[in-house]
Image (tube, rainbow, N blue to C red; front, top):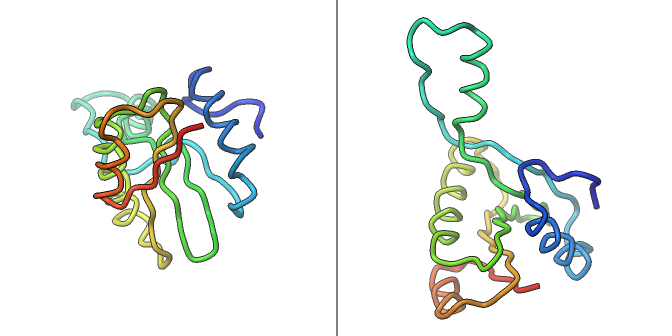
Length: 133
């Protein structure tokens, strides 16, 4: 466990630490706040500092990338995760594949604190792992 998790809020952290307690030993390690995607172009005429900040802040941020032998888990941690989380995982896994070109398989994963209607069915049909902790 870390003392601070980049861009996670207190409820996210509580959910994530419960996941680590119950499933963390299944992983070789974790990366946090992994940036993917192209980001947006800053307006013309802005300084280098602003350009760098926009380059970093306008990209998508994966909460956690978990590493297992022969598999990379792209993980979204969200209280009461619903269909928006499915869209996030689909987006993040594709961009991770494009940006990092891993040779291991990529697994989408949602970690949440409460099962919402139809989420088990929807995540299963899209081959996204779904954990309630």
